[in-house]
Amino acid sequence: MKVLSRLKAKLHWHHLVHGGIFLMAIVLFPILGEYEVFESFYVFSRAHEDWELDELALLVVLFTVALLFSVVFQARHLRRMAQEREAMRKSAAANARHDPLTGVLNRRAFKTVAGELARSQISDDAPRYIALMDLDKFNPVNSLHGHEVGDATLQEVAERLKLEAGTGGTVARLGGDEFAVLLSAKVNGVQAERAAQRLVHEIAQPFNFGDSAVFIGASVGLVALRHGDDISEVMRRADKAMGVAKTQGRGRFTWYDADLDRQAMDREAIAADLRDAIAHEQVVPWFQPIVELGDNRVSGVEILARWIHSERGSIPPGVFIEIAEDSGQIGTLGLSVLRQACVAAKDWARPLTLSFNVSGVQFRDPNLVPSIRMVLEGTGFPPERLIVEVTESSVIDDFGVARAKLEELKSIGVAIALDDFGTGYSSLAALQNLPFDRLKIDRSFVTDISNNLECQKIVAGIVSLAQGLHLEVTAEGIETVEDLAYVSYLQCHRAQGFLFEKAVPAAQVGDFLDGKWERLPTVPVALAKVVGT
Ligand code: C2E
Ligand code: CA
Ligand code: CA
Image: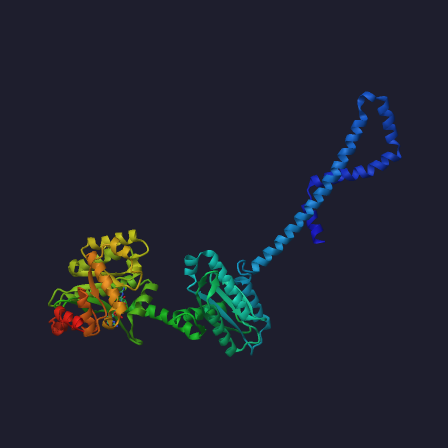
């Protein structure tokens, strides 16, 4: 019936005209026959043979037959079109519910199904459970093995999830490399945990395609879906839990915990307190000595920001620097700390250099260079004693932009150090293309170097690279005399670490100015020590 009504809607005037003529022909022929019109016509045509009227009649008949065919053909064509349209509509409706690549439900359909459950079918005492899964290490699959293998991997992931979900479970691909499993109604909390564990385990098994094996993993956030829950909120919680699983080292599952939201609120509260603390100069510079290898004399200090919160106590810079970046305060924080450091440095008996950390967000701030210059002019601190430390990740995106910024910095007279080298991209191109003066080897390669062959090779490699590029090398994280001996042996220029001193407040900098480390082994002694062992 539907098809018919659709057909009617598609009928055009010319179809009606064709049909009309055809019907008229059918009705008219017998009528005309009844009234002996054909006989009269025959007589008439005999009488006027030169008019060729019988040919005319034949034409009319042929025309009518042609019309008949045309109408039949048109009708069949219309019916086919209507059928196709119907099929297309059905498959479009199916596609709107299913992910075209894997065939499992898509995000919208999953939310509809789960939302419907929460509204009507879940009882108060028996929640359902949702496992939200994000694949680990999936992005390199496309670049290493190609998109076809990437697609095949996603399809296989969906298959493994379907097996694990079983009957009564629902699998969905939420987009990209994110999946969700609504576990079966029979599963209780403990079983949900086991299921989540199995999901993680299943995805960690290799995916074999021909000769290539793909290894990925999965991080899973687990949440309960209760009667009356808002499905968007439940998905947000699952996402939060999944994020925690990722930061805890991937390849695991984590329950959603209301504490996670409290922590987020904490960050907001800390961001608000930070604003106050910066304004009242409660975020202060502490100073860690940087020592010249050769004579072990302090030649400079690195500024390390410290904040002792009135209620929470000391908050580590790893925490508040990130909060400052996220809340747009890193610029003011850095300048406040730099200004205080420049003022303090005036009282020191020796002209130490100041090393100032600039984070990625800070580096991109167009006001960075003008405001550093203002601090230098305002405090009278000589620019040639300031070293700006940037990390590789700040400069790696666009060497052109980075170079312009670094040249701008150098134009006001400060030196540039590349910080934490070895942890990021360790890009030779970055070293060659950008105007660095110093290179700081990350402490993860330095601490305990004398016992780690791998680290020895890496540091030796970095030092010889730096020599070729005329960069001076600082080794961070010197904790023992052995560490010091080894980096001296490898001909680093400078060293920094707890062996000498942790960061101290401005007032205590005077204590290490008088060179108490001259008693530590210097280069010849260190050399003998390393070569001798
Ligand atoms: P960083 O620039 O790599 O700073 C060196 C970090 O290593 C400092 O941690 C320092 O206390 C620590 N360290 C120094 N010697 C040793 C050692 O021998 N062994 C060990 N295990 N650690 C050592 P801190 O003060 O916690 O700073 C952490 C990071 O926070 C810094 O890493 C830096 O990236 C950032 N940061 C600190 N102050 C500022 C600042 O004023 N501005 C910006 N943008 N970032 C800052
Ligand atoms: Ca640094
Ligand atoms: Ca560093």
